[in-house]
Image (tube, rainbow, N blue to C red):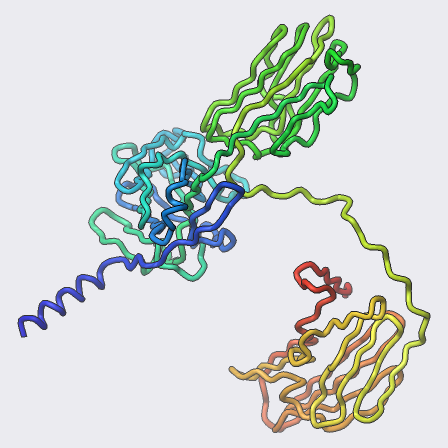
Length: 511
């Protein structure tokens, strides 16, 4: 009896502990960088159910990122660590404690017991009043030695003694919880995973680790007088040149007011690492980084050689640099950039001129027609051909061919239900559950009489014309008792044109 009581006591204690039990997802983010995550990044639940609302020290959000399954050979290659949180801060003093006093408090991020304190004014994403707001991924530098090959505990909380009118919002991915997030809403509460917000939301806190396993150093040199002029091993430069000026072996000669630009995608440089551009020129110049919109940031004047620098852990995103000749002109001999590549996957630019295959020749013109023979109805117009099985007690779409290239678009005929009816908690598919009671030819097609015992009758009309295949339907309660039902029509699942359906485009008629 004594042993049984001890076992029961242990089980009771275990039930009170958060069940952190799932190894986190580890995958390649970009070349040389691994991301560790539990969230999908696509299921943020909004400002009520999708964030914490932390304004006092006792409200703490815990995230576990578990590296227990990481192989020795991979763990040994980790050189640097970054932490990303989907977050935002807000000064609520104008409403909660007027007058507004700005962001003047602090938050703490505790990584495996190591406390990092940041002012809420430290360049975090900030809530803009009277605007549409979304949290933003914000990055932190974490010492390599603070991360372990096991469960890593990251806690976000407000710092003690700074007030309670600055809010910290940590994003929540409201997908099925993986068991790696927990919360306590006050200092005297225990950790819980039953809910992650006071309104009752659940999921996973949107906190990630980035493990840099290969150098991300970036270097670029532009010598306008050389051929080729650009050395860009990482391929980050989109443009290097000038609208005006004269190129010679000595470099790019610019008249007063003329400018040369080097451009890259905003966000390609790691903002947690410093960056530097060294410009070798003769004459007087004005030089500046370019912001996200391509406008100069704090231009500075120089004569001859000059250097532009970007500090580590900066908030601004740059998209290039500009060098402008001042009075008497200038000649640019070389521009050298040293930085580090950003560790996030980069959004790829839209291809404005994709390679398009030669269009196949059009098939010979063919008048729309419908033929019903031997239990098969064939409707076609030279561009599309549909085959229906009408010979049994069910109406089924067997084939849907693209006439321009002969492709069979119906990859799964069994999934072409034609329509779907929901009665209560039951669902009935037109091609599977409705009995074919009769079929009659009409101009350009046919009308099928479909029955679902005891009380539903569907009249489905399928026709073909110059524009394509047309389907119309009337669903009737043929019984004496009122019947509530829902209808989805048409239902043609599993259509594809190419070998990879994910690459296909679908165009739906307007109507």
